[in-house]
Length: 352
Picture 1 (cartoon, rainbow, N blue to C red):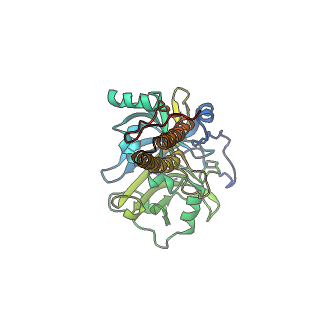
Picture 2: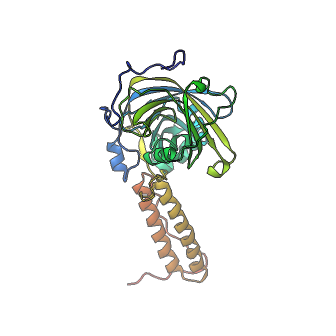
Picture 3: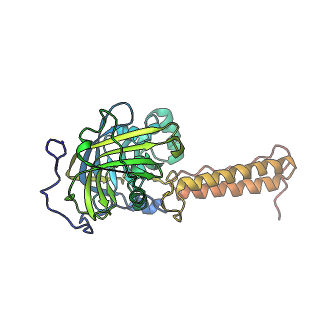
């Protein structure tokens, strides 16, 4: 441990085995096949606290992150700040976020609408004003480090010349070991403490880019003090973005969270980009369904224009049944049944 570095030690410096796992219970996964399963999996626990500073161009901002050492899942405290810092700032104006859970790049925001107008819309859509919904993939800072495949990509693509951070950024980094590699989200540089971490885990990474990483080059768990991610425009950003993160405090904690009072909505959860064969998330299913509904409604309109009112009504009912099935599967309030009214032709009497 570097003297005067400002990092609170986790425990006395005894080594742990590279393959030794945490004894802390793992959290339930955030992605579920049904809202019924999600309702049963509403208790989450965390045994590490990390105080970090995040700078995406306007100076460092403090944030507190609780981490589960068994599976690497995270709970972001001060959610308004952390939502902004990790790329989900558009939620701030729409939802008062109470909690933000992150697991392997997936994120689950829990809260309630901010104003009466939004609340009324949410009540019709979700049948609850206290709800949890997936917000898809967050900042590449999380995605580039929190999955086993992403960690392997990073260490398999290390560059020979680690960069020096810009002046005034990441103080003390020059005294640490720097490693830099290419990731799907951009160029990631990490600054590692010497020696081994005292935290036992088999999770590939603990924390939001800083924290504890399993270093396969030396078969040791190591503390990451600083991280610098350069995300170019072609990595999904509108402009090149530099994100700097510093770990200030790493210490044991006891934090639990119960979500039984929140309606679980899975329609906005995206699939895992590092698991090509994984099942589509609710957001991916919604995008497919939206295209099917768009094409189907165009066909309904064409049938109506051609005088085939019965065909238009039957196709419309089929499309609405498909929508209602999706809504029920993902925790959304189903729309009220509505019979299509033809504008260009008369409905034929029902068959006897």
